[in-house]
Length: 218
Ligand code: DX5
Ligand code: ZN
Image 1: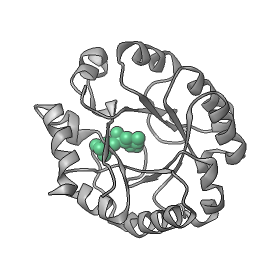
Image 2: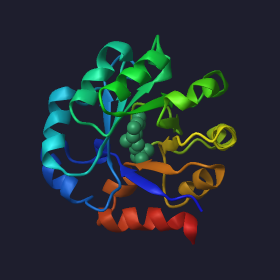
Image 3: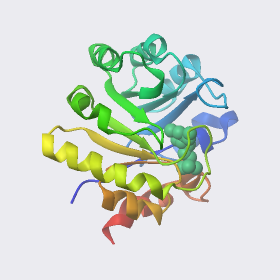
């Protein structure tokens, strides 16, 4: 059995009360922070100054998901802010191997994300350069969208490649994760689960985290 990691996304939290909202997920494995630039995705959230404030407001590890253009230029500064991991989109990087090495050099784990329709095969040889592969299970940009089952075969192929190569890369899924869809994603081979609305939409976010964590086991 693969350990399950739950990373609540603060995209679904109340941005006017971030410190309190972070306290409501103290049992999470990390906090997922969605950075959007209105160019790579049609939505705008927050940037380095707010990430820095979040860093000071919580002792949870920060899992930064950059949905921004020109990741080669902007991603390294997020590593410098003390993020545990920085994930850039392959579609937004001209030199993903160089960027992954730069993130590690600056002390962060290197993550790379793929949109639902981006194939994983071109990236299989660079998996040893990564600490995490994020397979988006919705089109990035917004919380609360339904899980795309069409991504499940890609999750399976990525899991096979990771196990075959024996590289310890976390396999993260993000978008539409609920107590129901987490079963299919876990069965396909994911081991890190981002959940926004399923956690912050609940009356008790920590109970919701617990239910998600136990769902694949029951
Ligand atoms: C979407 C973001 C997700 C989002 C997930 O572009 O990357 O992290 O917060 O929200 P839910 O869990 O509601 O789909
Ligand atoms: Zn995300």
